[in-house]
Length: 122
Image 1 (cartoon, rainbow, N blue to C red):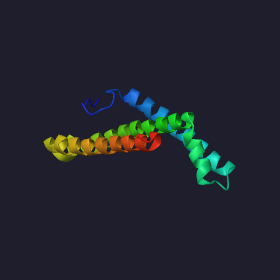
Image 2: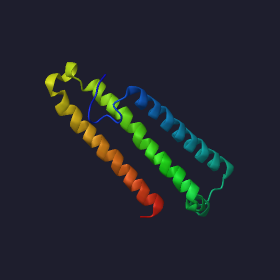
Image 3: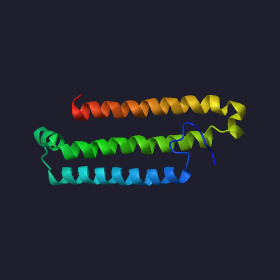
Image 4: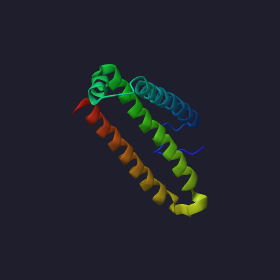
């Protein structure tokens, strides 16, 4: 088992469950938006704005944003620990893996902050 300070939970089972849960949230959000678009073929900006003015839709979108963050982080952490390992890079693997993980985290966190600013008008 790989334990690392940059791991979300230090438990492979927890990460697996988190990815499945976030996939369900993202799937539900995608199905809802697709259904909304299909049910409103001549969608105008005012209708779209009304939908996102609703508090429940903002909360649902925020949940989807957080799910994207968690889902992507677990995936990127897994990829970075699988491909930037000691067998491939020797003792320098941490020197490569850690900056990659930091860049991914900063990007994902920035996207969520930016999404919250757009969503809530902050």
